[in-house]
Amino acid sequence: MSSSRGGLLVVTGLLGLVAVEAFPGRVSRAADLWCPEAALTDGQLEPVLKRIVEEGPRAWGDTGVPENTPPPWMDKKRMAAGRAFLERYPLASLFGHVHGLYLLFAVRSVLDVLVFTGNSDTPDEAFIRYMDTLKGVGSWYSSDFFTPGTPGYEQLKRVRSLHSLVRKDMADRPQDEVRNKTRIAGSFKGCPMSAALRRDLGRQASTACPRRTAKQDADNDIGEDTGVPGAVWMSQYDMSVTQWAFVGPIIQFPERYGVGNATVEELDGFVHLWEVIGYTLGIDDKFNFCQGGLEPTVRRSREVLSTIVLPGLRAAPPPWEYMARCMADGLGYLLPGVGFETQLASLLSVTLDSPAPAVASQLSAAQRQAVAGYRGVMDSLRRDGDGVLLTPVRRLYKQILPILSTSVPLEDVKRLRHRRPHRSKNCYPEL
Image (cartoon, rainbow, N blue to C red; front, side, top):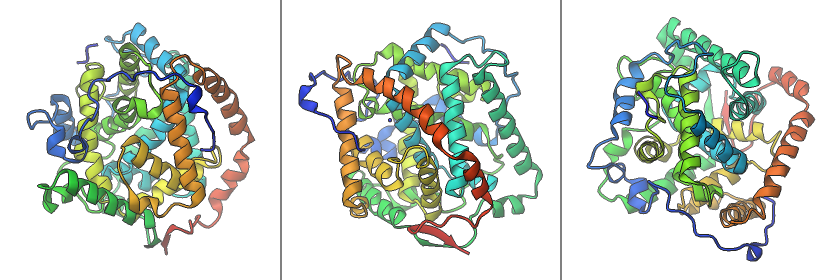
C-alpha cells in the first residue's frame, strides 16, 4: 500500500544564472545509466520494482476498482502541488511525455499491444491516437477525474474501457493469432535510425560498461520473443511501465527539461498525482510505480531506464523505428517541430547526455539547428530563476495549443484511414 517539453531563439546572456538543485537520484556517472548492474543498489532491484518485474507480467492489468472512488491514501495537498508543477513547467511535461513514449516503445510487450490494435501504425492513425492521449492526460492534470461529467472523469472512463476491450480481445483469441497480429507484415526497407541507434548505444554501453556480455544485452532484445511464461496481455507490469513513461524521464532528468527551480514538494506532488491516476486506471497498489513518494520513485525510474528500457533500445529493430516515426509524423500535424529525427537526437544528446555520432550523421542541417535550438531553450528555461521566460512560455502554450488543435482538419485526417498505408521514405514495411 502506498504512503503517501526548435525554432525558438533565446538570448541566454540576459538570464541570471541560477544553481540547479541536486534532485535526489540524479545519474552522475555514465555507468549508472548504461550498466544495469551499476544502476542497482547493492546489486538488487528496488523492492517494489522487483515485485513489478517478477509478479506483474502474470497479473491482470485492471483491479476493477470503480472509477469514481478515490484511493484511501490520496493526499489532495500533494496532488495540488503536482498540478502546480505542471502548470509552471508545461514544456517539461510535453517533451518529457513525448520522449517517454519513444522509450516505452522499447518495451516489447507494450510495443506488441500497440501493433495489435492497429490504431497507431500509420501517421494518420497515430495522430488520432496520440492527440487523444494528450487530451486525456491534460484533462487529468487540469480537472477532477473522480466526479462524473467532468472532462477528467469522462476521459478516464473512456481510456479504461478501451484498455478493457483490448485486454479481453487479446486474452480470448487463439494466441497464435494474437502473436501474428503483433507483427507488422512485410520486410522493412530503409530504417537508418534504428541501425544508427544500435551503433551509438552499443558503443556507449561497451565504453561505460566493458564487462557486460552479449548474452546480458540479449536478455532485453525487443527484436526477439522474450515473454515471461504465463504472462497476460496488458498486465500490471505493462501498466506500471507505462506509468514510468509519463513520470520517469521528468523526475530523473528535470533540469534537462528546463526545470531549474521546482521544489521537492512539487516533484513529489507530480509523482503522487500519477500514483492516483495509476490507481484509477486499475493498477494494484502493490504494482503502483509511483508509490512511496519522490525518492523511491526516482530510484525505480533509474533502474527501469538502465535495466529494461536502454537494453531494449540498444537492440532497436526496424519496427521500433517505424512505430516511433508514425507517432512523430502524426504529432507533426499538431506540432510541426516534433520530427522523429530531431526528437530522437534531442532525447539522446540532451536528455541522456549521450554522444550519438551515427544518429547525428543522419540529420540535415535544419535538423541539427533544431536540436541546438531545443538545447538552448531547455538550458535557458532551467536558468530562468525570475520567470522572465517561464511566464510568457506558459501563456503562449495555453493559447497556441487550442488554436493548433482546432486548426487540424480532423475529419480529413479520419478519411485518410481508408487510404493505402502511409510509407515514410525513410522506413516502411514492404508488403
